[in-house]
Image (cartoon, rainbow, N blue to C red; front, side):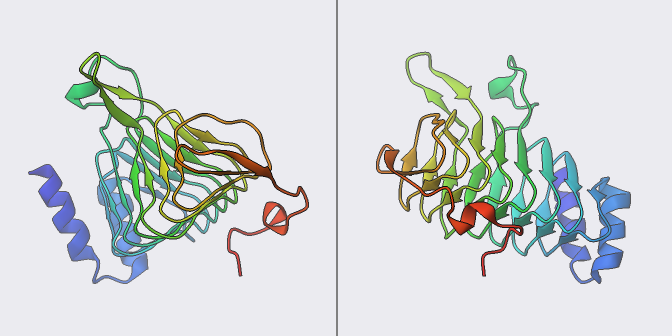
Length: 223
């Protein structure tokens, strides 16, 4: 019932101008929203929400069953993304200590129509881009040997580029200043920066130039 009420209130508030809707989200839902942040017509049911200066959430995002959503300055979540997971109260993980969170660091970008499972925590680094559409980040899975749910974190380093249609599995890591090629499946934790990773499963394919302009941007947008 509480979820239904929260969803209904947020949808009803879509007709309000942003300054009034921001005040409602802060007062009723306890969101921590910088004055210059913005949330479009989206449903956000995370336990805690913090948007720093110029952080932006577009329209038709659904964020549910996570403990924390934090977006640092000038980070951006595009439109029609599905962000969910199993929060710290979930029965399947009741014996585990964890926080289900999504952290977008400064100037990070997630475009549109992606699915992000935050059960074990997802970090997207500064000036990194999850580009294109229909990529999946999955932080939990079933261990068929033990017949139990397992979780792990996913970390995308700073100045990374994730191509369209990628799958990133639990405990995987993409090191800073790296590219994950379109359609790749990242299932391991890598540490070699300035590399192109691709394939199924993804592996290092070639080195990237340190002076590539993408790795030296001063703003999250690519014009």
